[in-house]
Length: 323
Length: 295
Image: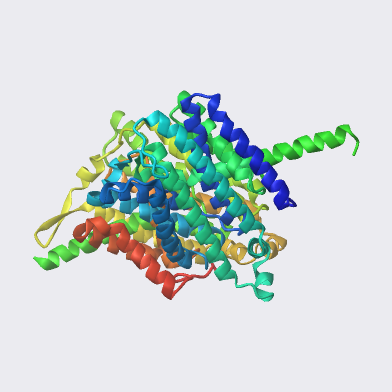
């Protein structure tokens, strides 16, 4: 909002430098958590392409995450390929085709209808992963071995994690840049116009169904990339990735960070990872806590936590300085 | 031989259709009149089963006879109805906001409810097979079919008749249809929209709770049963047309039958079959089979 490409690159550069030097000061466990936060960050950014920029609330975005993760798991197990770049390439192709097909059926609907359908497809995918036991190992999932990054082999899990952190960081920055440019291009502006007034958008000649479909495909492909990155990090993929609660997590991340600004969902994803990490050491009823936090946010901070806090601080500043 | 098998598939289909209709009808009524998609509806269903198990156990421990368990099932459904009214009450401040906030809110509630079930009743399955055994079985062409399943089918049909009667032949029902048609105008003409919404939520939750309570003697109550039922209910109301009770009825029959055949013949792709039906309906008739609001 009102940010030009120069300011954006500056923010991105600062963020990149901080994240790049962070691993020198923290333990491997925190390296893992931040890497996970960035993976979820890509996922949440892609969800917000649909929610904030296109005005479509998807309750089935975990489908794409799980799709990417299973592309990695299955390619490794069935085809014995060990190259991360190869996984990412395959993920791009598979998720592009599938999101085009699913999107074709979904984007003619909006609001609750859209939420319902996307949720349905995600549950269908879950059922397929569980039922086709011989192919996917059902609820046991598939364990993922450490792949080669840019042709480099790793024998030590620790050194892989440190290298993979930078790999994820680069892809995260790349995805954020691509998405930011897309959302601030004429295409992105048209999406926001469709969100605000689809009837008027249609009158001035924007093909709204086609634009919504492209938005869906973008969200699906980037969601799948984050899932593909997740698989070697977690070293295990299972059908729960596309379960009901997983769909909720991405919504929760974005709400935490604030959906009305571009970076909000990515910030929310990192907060989410740390919050979940703390909560799970205290209680197994993580969903209960998440649910209560969402209720509080919906009631009191409708713009999302970080944005509301920022507004509050700015408001207080103005009050103090009498402006 | 084959006719008997077919009859059993048919009865199983009706059985699935009946309890799924109870869940789907509440969902579609709330959606049609309040324009809120209640994502916590699956939790009403699972709460119905758990509360029924709890009351039934209480009854049996106090030495009440087995038929009194019918009463326990009904009481559970009433309690879930009250719970629904409570949910509606907490939704009231959100009606003037964008619809997405109501969705997020009920979504958060479903998170909370699912964990509350685990917190209160633990992770072990709960059941109450006494009623199932008590009712025995009927003989159909030399094969036995549980009478309890017949009873559930019967309740399913009675519920449909009740809902139809409520919306077309009672004052509250007619007012509800008027509010669904034009909320501002009804309000201007003196309809108390707020209390009407609470009543509609009560009815919707009551039927979902009844569905859960009724299914309890036939199966186990387990965590996660709510989201499974909600998934089926979604499919049903999309096939039938959002907001249409008749659509929910026909949709339940279709899904119930497909499910019965699917489970018996192709268990691996049972859900795939149901979704194939859904996709076909969506392509041919995007608004669903009976897709229009209460008018």
